Length: 216
Image 1 (tube, rainbow, N blue to C red):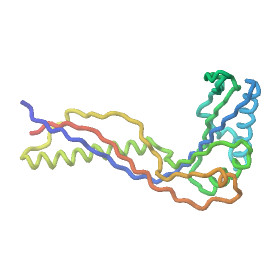
Image 2 (cartoon, one colour):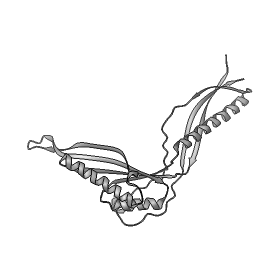
Image 3 (spheres, helix red, strand yellow):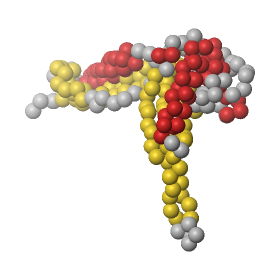
Image 4 (spheres, helix red, strand yellow):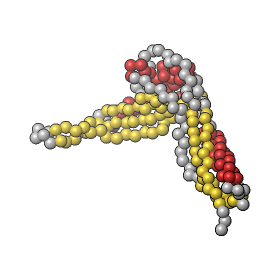
């Protein structure tokens, strides 16, 4: 019977963020469909103009999701029964703007978007541009970690690590974002004050793979 050893390797990487992702979600409501769509188009045009003032091409504003739906409200009739009535339409547009880490540039974006009258819901994250390179490093570290553990265990058992027989790895989406989060109350967001210089926290990632070796 062939002797084997199975070891789980863990890869760890700590990376500095080099990319800012500003997400801007705009919701528009109106009684008529045409009016809703016109207001939605106006809101996006205002965001595009705002980022142009912050020295971006308007095409840099990317749409990540677009939805339009009917809008109803619940009410009680004269008999106290709950009913629903049509109020109009609601359009939700989710957009994002990505650019290299530069908090001065971020401050300019926030300032111009705040003055745009588009009134978007903002969320700001710090991430990494080359995610594939980070994932490659994670997997290489996981393999090296597993081999190191396997060699220690084999040596302790009086055996020698032989041929690699199997690798089990489940691909999963990495959450490649810094734990640093920027949040603004509505009053602060639409103030005229510039934000201070920021140094977002490093992104700590880990991933696992299982390796099977023969023992000799």
